[in-house]
Image (cartoon, rainbow, N blue to C red; front, top):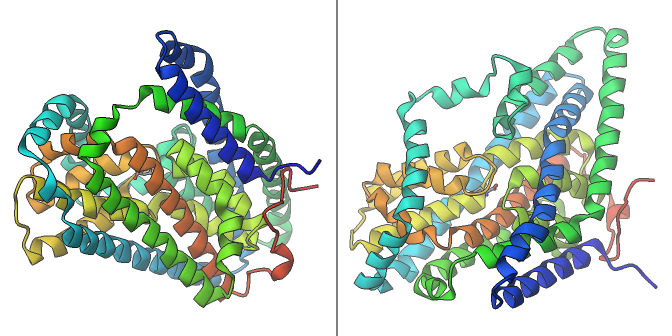
Length: 436
Ligand code: ASP
């Protein structure tokens, strides 16, 4: 019998997880059973993905940069990558603003619903505000200072420090380019082989993906708030989902225009990473799989993927950008505030910076939203309004974040003649393990 393609297996895992969660939440023992006996497997799966994120970035970026052979090529690729990332991010914020101003989801929130939500979620919201406060208290150049680690070993001990590790890896790669080739060769060979091992580990971890997402979603269902809240915040959720979906359409169009690859080729190639992004709510945890898919199935040369994707996972979050625009204006509408054009233009700037600054982990977008709200003079307490349904929406915006990175990597690769030809046009039946 033909084996089911990976993304179908993952989808099946997700569906059975949701089903089990829904069924067991009607029993008295179910929620605890899932928490004690099923959720831990989901946690193990996420841990495995996070476990290899740092070594992967180190090995693949050092190898990628040193393969570039000259510094001017590196700066060209860096400039192009960051330029495209910035354009898609600004486009995402503008799209979010247009949608939320057209649909006006906040105008439908009843006074009593608003008060209920504020009361129920004040605690969670104030925890997010406290984290945001710490970030805000730092000076304006602090984000820049934060990129440069003072100790690389310390930097690699926390997945939130991905930008620091990226900085080190690029710096180290530059050093490798600048020393004589015969001296650099053994170091490059080491990282090359190291990288291969990590890729093999990703293959192995992905064998467990269907079970991992099953456990994650079952746990999520029994821990999620009631459906009533979804209804109250339905228009807000729908507005955001439309924005996130439209961004994916934008990527499909961009990929078609700039690389000539068909929508089905692009979507088939990236689907498992999208499903994982949805299940883990973290671009960082999904990164190993995004890299594998982009290299093995979308034909992006390793040299480009290993440079563009880790940077994208940390700074390019278009789903988060749409979210920040929609959420900020939604809260303002719910409080009956009229935002001037100037304020909305300000949101474009702050939301762009906030999405760049957001860590690639669950819930990070909401912390940075506090900063957008503060800048626009929208009550930060409004965070409590959207808190209840933030997790499912976080799952969805992470899909857009990951898809955006993949699309940009294809565009950059194509512009450098590093997008492989059609043999990579694998269809839906491709399976893991992918490497021999
Ligand atoms: N969870 C998102 C990500 O990892 C960030 C966010 O909270 O918007 O991409």
